[in-house]
Image (tube, rainbow, N blue to C red; front, side, top):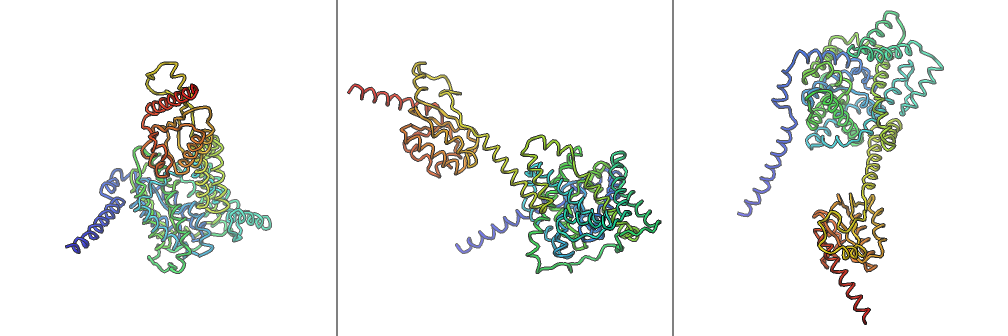
Length: 580
């Protein structure tokens, strides 16, 4: 009989685990309600999807080239990842594809491991994103502070701009890993052998995009400027570097790129790509919510959609993708009502891949560099930077350090640096909020039931301290040292009802202050401590002596009564000693 019960218990546990896993999977998969939204306003979605595709085409080409994987990789990413993230994602308005932030991460991977390494990293990042979605990690992305987000956005914009300097000047990249060094080398080469046509194309395209966006935001100036640059260079027979041959269509899905032996070496890079994809996608989805009236994205479902997109896109030669803030904004402003718009955007780009590859192959690289330079400039929200800089030196420092780390190192390092500095500053603020206040003996309590003379006598010999805020390692020593120096009293009442949190270090320091007071024959009483705080204090033995002598009270009046009786006893003993 016992053997049977032993067999049943593991089986029941497995069944329960399977049910939980199934419920979690169903929670992130598209459901009927999600799919039904695509029929709300198909005409608006078709128009919005076409508009986004026009804007996305030069960006997909440019980011593909900038990543080092080629223009075809950018298009494949926009088509495959764009469609899958739209279908499986958690936002009805999000548009996904290759982005500048991801390009910054991918460039060093291309240099070290080649295109196959980038595709492998994308696939591994997809697996990590799926795990994060099923683990419910979406909610944690909301804890990234605004200065960190703005800082790495500023850093990304700077990196993207510097990456385009060689192409904009018509010189070969020097191969330097740091973008600032590569840009400096490009300027030196240009000064030695100027390529004015490339410079004119890049400057012209960037100027048309920036000025046009101010005058007529609804017109896709990026596509018009690139088309004009391609037409002019083709008709004039100008010698400029172009995208080159593009295959007509997507390649057949394949795992031939996978380098299993390099997977351990690529794990760190995959983690960085997954973290960036999660952060940027959820930021973009949040921005879409803010621009719409009633939309609210599902963070875990969005991570799941990005995981599927990044898992499948490399099979077709695509690089890692994320939600794209700029394209999502265009989608919302163009009147998109559901995820059908993002699916239309992917379909239009697929038509371009299959039908217009020869035309696309003639686009000058300098023109795409102009597109990306203009995109980098538009990424910088000057008003937001000013607001954060004015809000305090701490926020300005976080922003500057994150942006600087992005330029000097990489995005993941930058975010870690930003989070560490933000955490340290937040800890400092919390520690400063803690205070030790000497309060009137009966403050906040019902009127005392003894005469004013006696109350004054009590106040002369009994002091009450109220501790407000957290008692923890970062700031407890500041006020507990002050407590330990208390003199010229017979009893100290510690009112702990306003303590918000207490950790082991704070508890031990409180115990040390109590011990120092008792060594000077000062009676210490504790009142109002919460149950969870008492558990911490008792686990460390801080209140053992007080508990043994019944000097820990739930309410302050009880502690005052105890101190009053103690003081009366002390006075009586002193009087008796005087008579002797």
